[in-house]
Image (cartoon, rainbow, N blue to C red):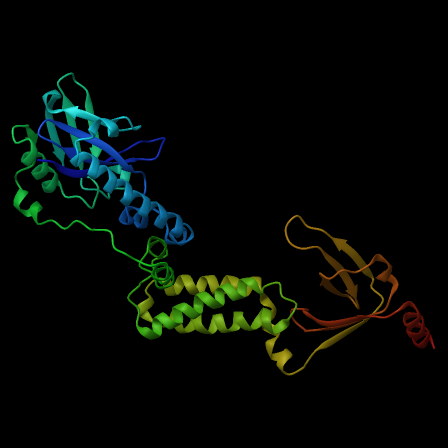
Length: 362
């Protein structure tokens, strides 16, 4: 009779080892079948959902490989080919005559963030101990049952007080989920990332629509924050602010409504061209004309290169390529009154500049 169950060998400086333990009438065989992310449940619980999406195909490939490997090992165990398995790294066995005691503890460990079903300790007659963590998807009673069915004479220390209740304890199992479902989870919440932001996933349909639009507009606002097109730069911010105000008055969003409003306020302060939207719509532009009194090139460590051009005591920042020889030419700059956003500008030729100055002198 062969029974089996799963255990985790915790390691501080290396990834954990995920063992499938085969129990025969004479021995325990500890066969490695996985590592840190040994199943879908561990994968989804141990890393933020954003990284789940990025490494999804890698995990799917690993999951398929592990399933095939476990099936191969099961076949070898049933065919009594234990010696071949023990030749592989990290695999080992313990003869039942070497075991002095087995203790099953229900206290979860710090190693997994207290997300496990306790530990199991094998104490050998020579004083050596082997300690393992019981995965959250494996119940303690099932381990005790497997050992007792294969080797009923082995002594097991076990809390019998709540044994009947523990036989009915719920152990979460890995669930199949597609990549699209993981992306939706990132948007709607109910994930580690969402928990950190205190996001309530139980939104109404209208709330979920607002949620999606807020995320989309936030991304668009970030992408267009350096756009040379005024509407592309300002309109997403205005719509984002409008949606944030609606969210602020919807209690179903919980604390996340204040988080959304704060992020939007920061975006509006950093990208303040939106204040000129009424002037833009009314075509109330301003024009600065003249030869620059200041014409300097700046190349900051962070951000794009730009030219600082001062015309009629107004400073403008032009990110387009200019030439040093333009410093004595006539500039005609159309801009918005508050943000000084440049809508259009023209640089006259040397001859046109000479004629312009001559007209002014006359």
